[in-house]
Length: 203
Image 1 (cartoon, rainbow, N blue to C red):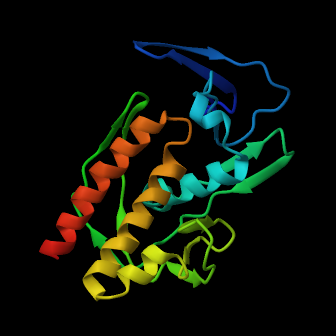
Image 2: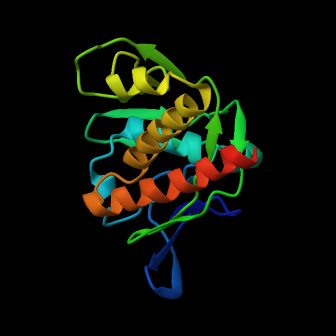
């Protein structure tokens, strides 16, 4: 981590995973820049597949309250795409399902929030196998209203709501745990689906 001190000089702090010790040393720079730069290496396998745009979206969603409260300015620089993104806290609307469990993975724990809202749209593609997909540009889930499972679920409101929750959970797990083995992805889907459906009953 590199940051500018009160003396307007740049300093660098280095840490290693599993080691509580750290070092702070002056960093030679032509001009010290304002703010803080954080560099993490090496990247986990799942993160290597993320573009700067996806990281920006993830930070805006997962850390929105911290970013908003601290009024920090967060910039993601994608050196491969030669683009940079300003992280804007992304506000969600709808009924929040509280007390979902922390998701435990080989890479650590993750906090998840699940909202019930009109955060989806429909596209009829009868005969096609896909049930839903995430549209990053519009930040919504596109549900295939022509899929036979959706047609079946429309028979009553409770069944349709459970079906839509499962689609949300699928997209949530896929977006947040890219790179995990298939069996671990399925475990996370089962875990989140169980708690989300329990909250639907009690809500």
